[in-house]
Image (cartoon, rainbow, N blue to C red):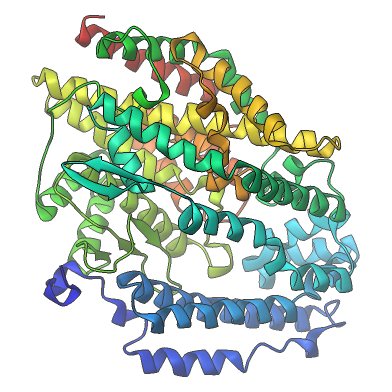
Length: 592
């Protein structure tokens, strides 16, 4: 479908940001001329000068965000239009100039006396920046000189080379062969692989699985070298900034204590018996003597579907989230009616879905809606992100409004869990749908909590090896991944060499210690949703405090406002118990 064929009510209203491309270009030129901060360098010990700088930086951040969001959204409407790709490149260049010009700020602030910095935190004129200043104090032991910071900034693109190289391997050079699918010879792709291994055709799943991993194995030496380079970069920066480990460095940047990471790994490791049980149940239900990795995603309950056109599905989501209150429902309706959302799949449009913040406005949402159950959940998921952004932006100054990535998946997953519980109640007499929904929930937890924690354990092991000076060879990495995989999946699955090589196809590994946030996110979401469903309005009120918190303090403390303390083991045990109890319900319905 061409974009011009889509009704306006199903397109986001991008003119709210800039009415025309010409307006964008005018603003770009204006901002480009306003990036010189040299007049402030050496004067940050003067409160008046510092406050002026912070306000100027804050205003520039807002302008740059609006420029970047417009360029991104235009590009994502139709990636074949090179004009908006060029807009994005111009914005990236502007961000680089900004970072270089502002490189003096943190070293100079860190050189200030603690008494002065503490006085800023107590000063109401600096209320918008108090958390930022607290983080500067905390980072003092890790601050390097202005000159070194400039050099690190100049090397930013170089440090991204490993990720870029893997992206080229994964998206351009991977020798994926042809495969026969639905009566046609087609080239195997990442998307098609996902479709085939989720199908009910076991022979075809096996064929796709073997061909897909053969492609990665044919480049395993190159991928190993690329990943090893990325890990060595992490180790280098960890030493430069004087952290004890890559893990400490990564978690410090988001103000998360290592105990959270350790609690996650321990809780999942201690409760793998339920996962092993589910794997064995999967084998029994499918009727196989042996279960292979290509059997892990095929549906256990087939032929069940809820199909709704978009508007009906959106109303269904609003109804399903009634437990969050009338204000929340009203905002969902507002987003629908005031065109925050780009709905239809069109030629050249970016795949998938996302929510994006835009300074001074509401968030925007990209969908590629299809009338199927997964896409109903996608509406709930993306609107969870959006209303988290909405409440944070409404209740916090811009400088403290952007919540950390650590909590980014919480609100979206809370919506999914609440919607699933609503559906289970609403369709309580439909046994087949009950089975389907329980299986959907089990696979969501398995993929987001168990699997991402397995990835997190691999990352931890790989970085620890590099920190000890051990070379990350393909054999060493495959052996590490195989050992972790055997622990997670147990004896219920056949562990072939392809599973050992799975690490080689995970793009998130090029953003070190990122994947664990998916696992902590679903853990927090399960706890919050359970509390809302059992305690009602009091829990909703606490949840809204979290949604409104932005980056006013560290993310673990913000979650405590919603009743979840990830510095303790209890929330992780609750999530593990949720999986176990859901599995028991599923087994009962399936007569296992």
